[in-house]
Amino acid sequence: MTAIEAVEARAYRIPTPEPETDGTLTWDATTMVVVEVRAAGTTGLGWTYADASCVPLIHGTLAPAVLGQDVLDVPAAWTAMQRRIRNLGRPGLVSCAMSAVDIALWDAAARVLGVALSRLLGRAHQDAALYGSGGFTSQSTGELRDQLDRWVHEQRIPRVKIKIGQDGGRDVDRDLARVATAREVIGDGTELYVDANGGYTRGQARRVAQRLAGHDVRWFEEPVSSDDLEGLAELRRTTTIDVAAGEYGYDLVYFGRMVRAGAVDCLQIDVTRCGGYTEWRRAAAVAAAAGLEVSGHCAPNLSAHAAVATPNFRHLEWFADHDRIESAFLDGALDPAGGRVRPDPDVPGHGLTLKAADLEPYGKD
Image (tube, rainbow, N blue to C red; front, top):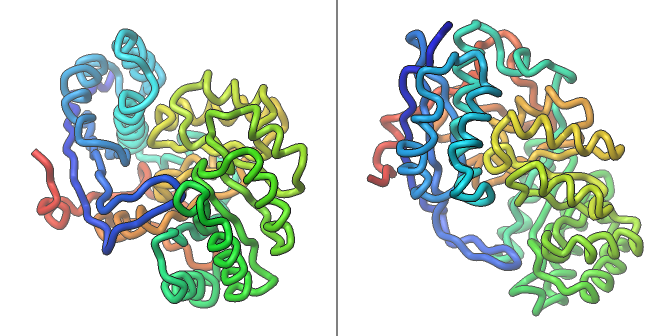
């Protein structure tokens, strides 16, 4: 037995270059909650993008549930955490905190065994497709053009996504103008996706979808609130564009409801929210049972390892904000150039090492 000896967490608040906005939210910083698990002289690394309040939850509730357990028995540790949080409620910050610990546990287990995390999970693919994601509604037309040009013409990424749903759906004309601009910049050979972040009503979403089809948009993410499963299913029946949602899935029951409702053409899973790699695998199986593919939401350098271990996988979201953070503060970050990434099958764990000294100025105590 290789016992888990310590679980430590720390939060870092990293400002964005300028305030960023989507259809329903504005932010000026991203909080990264980092977890380190130690066992047999090895440290496993995990993180979530959530709130600093995850730190005391990890230290006070989740860590005691897993300390002393065998680091190789990650599902057992995950189950212990699930039992410990029974009276706290699973969705939301609790699940984000569990995700960070679970990711660190899987990384530690793989490093103890001296194998790549993707091999420990069970590799199904050699690499994973990705799409560039950003196009915030707060960007000027020039900024949007520059970002799209960099993705498509410099990095050769053949799929891109921009935000629409301006001001909660109150400026549809601007949304459609930005879509037209995007298609002009990227040309006909690049797939174009949009994300409304739940900004539209059902009627708006139907009307917008009709206009989006004229620009050959292939992916309409959260056209209405992801809680409106009936509305998502209704839109699916009226458009040929793939409807996607699932990023706010914090437990298996959520994914089961979404799939049973016929709400999506592709199920999104966020490994830093859903409950980590342990729950990702179960959610992907739920999708597979319904003949659906899954797509990784954000945290690209963590999602890549789950991606290549998931048979019914479509693509990763290479989110600009998280790419900026992970490239700056992690050694071993993957390069999205070419539109595909391949986690190294010969590097133990997920191959990522925190640049602690560089991140320290952003620490929240």
